[in-house]
Image (cartoon, rainbow, N blue to C red; front, side):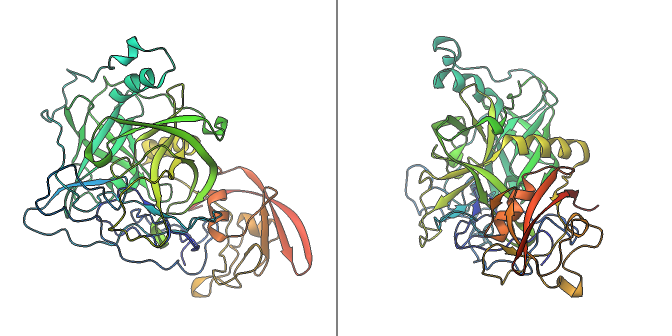
Amino acid sequence: MTSEQEPGSGSTWRPWDAPDRSEGAPESPETAPVPAPPEPAWAAATPPASPPTEPLPTGAPAPAAVPGPPTPDPFPWYQAAQPAPATPAPSRRGPGWGALVGASLAAALLAGTGGGVVGAYLADGGSVGTSTADAPKPGAGATTRPSGSIANIAATATPSVVTLKVQGADGVATGSGWVYDSRGHVVTNNHVVAGASDPKDITVVLANGKQAKGSVVGRDASYDLAVVKIDRTDIPPLPVGRSADVVVGDQVIAVGAPLGLDSTVTTGIVSALDRPVTPGEANDQSFINAIQTDAAINPGNSGGPLLDMDGDVIGVNSAIARAPGSSVSGQSGNIGVGFAIPSDQVATTVQQLISTGKAVHPVIGVFLDGSYSGEGVKVADSGPDGKPAVNPGGPADKAGIRAGDVIVAFEGKPVSEQGELVVKIRARKVGETVSLTIRRGSTERDVRMVLQGSGE
């Protein structure tokens, strides 16, 4: 398999709201990222074969003549709005159901930039333009509620959170995003914009209903992040906090447009940290060392911010889980298990996307054996197409790792799944020094190596 492929696991993950994309659809937690440009064969740790996936529609069809709120999109965070007239939305392969590595819960991550046709889109009014007039203003809670209260934080943050309307093959899908800087850069999920018919023509709806045209500056399927640029410099950016300082039990606030309902605020706590999540499949997989939260997240929330009680962004909402065995079409949305990309990773990747339009991923330069079921993660005996399993001159090669070696720990912590190892590596930065524990035969030893950038 290519360097971007991830091993499968008992659970499946799927991007929240990816519309029609050939990104991947989960079986257990499922994710549907957008195919990224193939990376060098020596990615962080690549198993020889991609995990099994199951074709999934982008969303449940709109109920026939049934009044009421839109039906939640089975492919989470991106809610599809009205599809092409009179043409049923073609069933797409939902985001790949990547394995939820390291977690015993066989949950499926729902994702997709444009969940299927889930009902009429609650359109925001306002004409499209680039005028800086009428920028969104904080709500009443910003002055009538105590500083640090949920109401105060929500009122202050919502003017900086936007809804993205992306025209795709099946119509218009919606997702969320937030203003990153004073130059008009908006952060969202890759799976939200991946299915755009024209990446230079995305409609960004502000919190007050005004609209602006946006274009994709850069996107990266591996981290499920994208940056969209709008010609507005008057919208205050959200401050980015340090996800490294977050602890389990911290209160959090999610803001976005679930089911097309813009400026929706939900709250909860951080349920877990460093949750290895690999939504998508094959070259479309994302590798997230996620923050897990019980804050309500539904289709349309994808790309929106997860805030701490200082109002700082500590994560980007990206995926949700569904109970194992439940059908995608029967998924009603939030079940209290959501996942966000940590802000430390977001800050690094977004800066790269703004500067160069692409992101660089840390790798160790080995191919992994996807058929291995023993303790640890095994380096394959050989790579695809007869290539060596250990990249000559790469980090692993320099550290003395050989084909057939078993990696049993990363930074002193045991690893048991290929996806888990890849996620841990991807959570680091190029140039960082890491340690791995290797078993060869009956002998174990620790080795250190400097992470190399993909493509180097």
